[in-house]
Image (cartoon, rainbow, N blue to C red; front, side, top):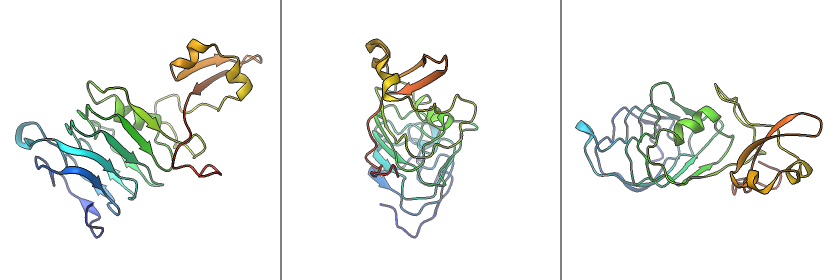
Length: 193
């Protein structure tokens, strides 16, 4: 755990160093460019970070902050003021072992989620835990989150459509709806928050 008094981690602050195990940030508000980057050029160093819990902070994560942390398997993100720099490159480029993403708090935009998962080459099967009842952030440049389907509407879907975890279908009234097959978020209370 980083000292709770620390609120800013500057550009390249821990680049090339062997930060190991689980990183927990409770009060950090800013993680700079390449702050924890390893494995390339002047940022040589062994990837030893296995988990990052960024949910305790009102945080902004800049470009390539965790680049090439190839042993990073678990990521917890999400506060009311979470912001991710997606203008140049994902903060998680090369995090090829990322298999669990926990979104604690308001959902990331689909654009932000795309930058987490699509910029990690060779990403294995990744499970994303999020609540459909928490208010999603406004999607930028993507389709956005769909209106939840009713249980009757989901029952109309054929089994092959459900196996892909995401799909689009047309209701009897001619409306197009998208669906996600998901589990309830462990961070979601009985009232959805």
